[in-house]
Length: 145
Image (tube, rainbow, N blue to C red; front, top):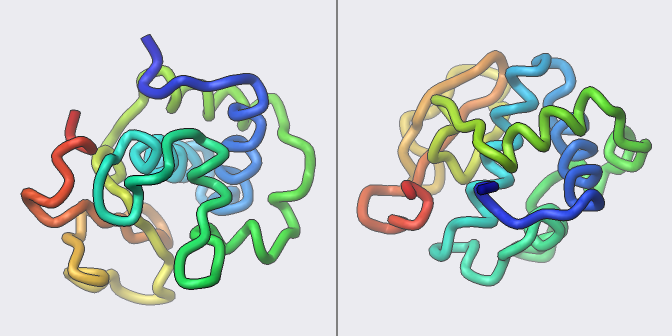
């Protein structure tokens, strides 16, 4: 049973986002970004109460901006999904979860050391340039299922 319901269109959309956000970090980095996308679709808490699908997650607007920079900046995100990234996206949607993004809802590349918290959320770990953050304990139990 998949972690979240999805269509072929969702796979392609997620694959495009994973590549746009983390192509420089290889397959592992793209899988971590995929973890965050799936976690947001599952999280019934915080900023993610109204996002239930992969489409909702990718195109979510917060504070007047898209949650994922790649949607606004375009470039790689608007290229066709490739089969390699589609396989990675399916892997995330079906079962793949791993530290540091296993329970993470956020990530960013600070251009230096990862801060111990980010907007009050706990640092889970780092992979290459991206820092991953989990919800503060007790604020989002749904992400830990």
